Figure (spheres, helix red, strand yellow):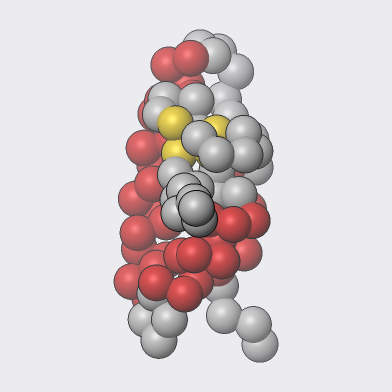
Length: 83
């Protein structure tokens, strides 16, 4: 019997991958998103920026007084088109 691959989705509000436990978007999620948004990098970046803002709000609530760092790199920088 073959198991279907589970999608690497975030656990909110902690923003860790529900499959591998890495900070989301994990490597597998990034590959999936690049495939899903192939040919529409602008839409991918808009989607990721929206999720970054949601994650920022969640993580600030979880750790008041300690703003989360590195979220732009984690959510957006990797998805920018290579020059």
